[in-house]
Amino acid sequence: MSQDSRLTLLCKQYHEFILFFTRIIVVFVLLFTSITIIRKNPALDRLFKTSGFVHTISEVTAYSTKNVLNILGYPAKVEYTYAYACIIDQGVFAIYLPNSRGIWLGGHCLGLKLLALFIILIACFPGKLKPKLLFIVGGVFFLEIIYVSRLVYLTIYSKEIFDSGVSAYIENNIVGRAHDNLNTVIYFLVVIMFIIYVRYFSQGKKGKGNNVISAP
Image (cartoon, rainbow, N blue to C red; front, side, top):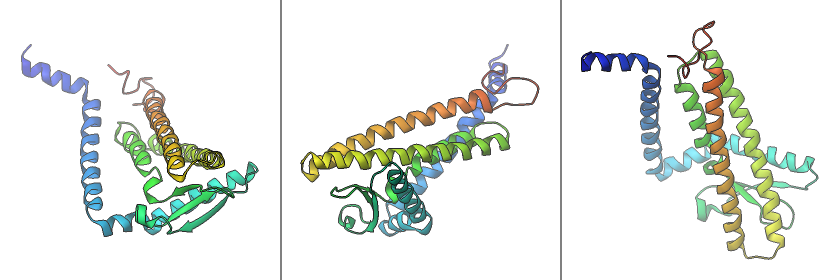
């Protein structure tokens, strides 16, 4: 068999994967270019982080966190403040318990990159549109529940650290490390969810019983 024939055979055999990775590369190049353009323009970056859409998501997330804390018996409060604008160049929602510094929630910490990664992975993978849409909607809802749970934990944790009497600098470092560790867990969850989608939801033609992974 000639080299060209082997290459053609390989392309046919792994057509779905080649298509998937091609889509991923194209989308990530476009996404990276867009993010770079936004970040290099301070006014555009500020507008993106504080626009109506992002601000609304921040507000809903902040008050959802507050409501969960209230249900759990914690007298949590939410305030929109520009007190930290000198640090992050935008207004933020401060979620806190009485007599604590609390945590900040702004356009830069909504997990939008995480959600984008999840949506891109599922959307680019070969498969039928309806299962993709259902899985994306369900996955985004699940990730938001996890994200709010993380904020609930960080708010309570920040109160405990504050009560220990450490300085604001040390508190920020401790809470920041907890924030980063939880981020790693959530990214791991996205990988698990993608594997679940590929294994159980990316069915090709009905009746064949094979998904893209198991197809010969």
